Length: 493
View (tube, rainbow, N blue to C red):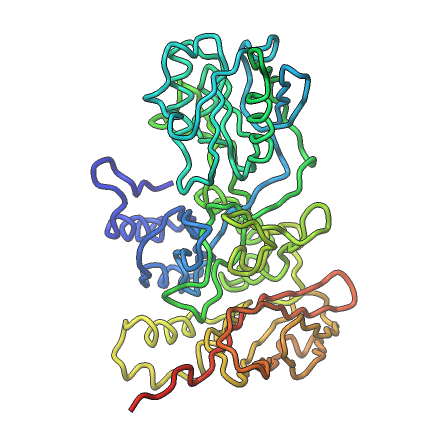
């Protein structure tokens, strides 16, 4: 483990580079970097060239588009997703209506008796406005309109506790992510309530002629009772504004309400662990999976390991439905939310086919795209960025049609036959069937993607190419295409 963040200094580019160099010198097998940055640079390219996989966080600036960081093609960039673990509590109103919410309510008076509700409107619900009138009561905050930034949950709860309150309920549009990462140390429960339920509690308060009351049960831990995984609302989204021809993020992994060990400086009340959320938590999940894959397949390159992770990813949740993406507007997830999908370790161990890349191909890419060399370097690069043998395809400026080539290596049974399946874009693959043998382990194919006949300046459309061997192997890569017409403005003389 290497330290890159220092008090008063932060996480400098020079500090990151020093850590990377030290890691190479120490002979690490995998480099896991839960870091972000405002720009892309080649610092990690020489790491991959030495056969060391580099895993990076995608960033926590979602759910707006073009917020993904660390989008260089040699990196494995990880988004964050929820797990099927939840921490439900039961809210019981004075009229005996019951609702399920989320909380770390592990102790307190609220579970054994009803407490009077102290009601606060949006503009009054802040730590500064919590006074002694909350003593023995449960604070309920109501926000009549959607807030652009979330309230200061922790300090509101802390102030309530200091003034003698016994609990706080606050609205949240998405209760998959619990309120903060230090809540285990709060002496009173902070309850995250779905906004629709919040409004029903608000109606109860307004309609109650006497004193409105509420009771909050102790937290339970349940597994498999909620739809999961979902892409976290905070997880940064593609496309990359620096490299739009590289589909990012690559993969999603558990990164919401993760229980992990905490260093001494971050311990709360001496507790050596804490719940935390972020792509900094999802990144090491993937790094650990790569460690397992690397032990199973020690000769695989970083690109091969990345391919195995991506081509076997999940796109359906635990109910068999398309994975959802939380955000300002919840929706079905697409490749700019989770890349190829959510990591599936068991399937990644036996991917069937891999998309491998020589480090020299990355150097050609960076010389042309990043200005590492002179402009003459670009003229020596054969093909286009779309032909870089990534386990994904991104075309940000499709006008009529574009053909791109990919090469796959069979790492499954020696004699295998794979058939192509295309969804749902207007595209073809040649040849549509790949036949492998002991003598022929590597095959290339061409994918041709066509624009629709509509004269529209379009948004991105998404699809996938799947190679299936008729058995357990479904080798899938995501595709993102944006149609761009050549002339969109009238010429003015």
